[in-house]
Image (cartoon, rainbow, N blue to C red):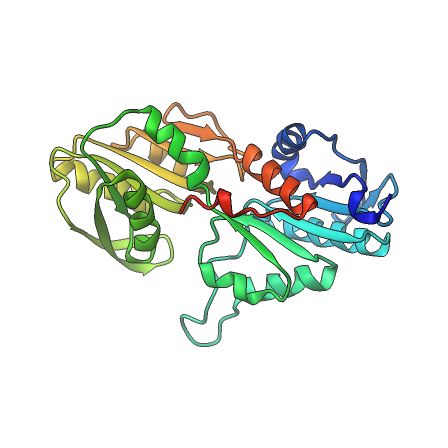
Length: 313
């Protein structure tokens, strides 16, 4: 049997264990055994408890803060490389540090570029991720990147709601491309929120470009952190006569008072994926799993077949 025909092995970083179990179940394989040895100072050492020599290895782990999550992915990649794995795919449903994709002021790091180089140096021969904060991050890699879109998992849920008079909205100018893609599929209008920030996570002013009166609005974004932008946008749209406001955000970072802010907001619901595990159960938050999408693409990568049918937008 050739190396390409060998069954791949799937492993999980601890921070994404629940999602990895779902992906493995959808894929039809069990997760491989990894032993994590902790040290008293907080350092840790992962070790594969089974051979990966000559195999394709998928290591599943989102790299949301703290930095230990990224470090665990890097150590797992390095361990697979040193154990003579043939192909090593870093499956990162959420690619952390992606907001640092450029120098937007003097004397700052480009964190996304640094992370890309670290992943390659650690041994990743392929990257698989979903809804990057900025599409150009793919260009930071010299290895193949499978950049998946969460629209393929969210759209069936939106269609199941059977909403009328739908309008798609972007909470900022940077997300307008994503909003237009959703609106094209839904054959709807688009509105844009124009915002100004005092500093990171603090909005000083927001204005709405477009009409929402009598509309069921769907706000789309790649991530939700503090929830300030989305809840402020929802308030503004309801004031302008919107019938309802929902939000689709792929990555539920949800830091600070975000859970309380969402629950007390005028949002009808927040629809997220499970790239990052929720810390609380909140009635307004609906989770749609990305596991079937990743399992399908992993199969196609293993079989060397096209994944273009997964690009809804």
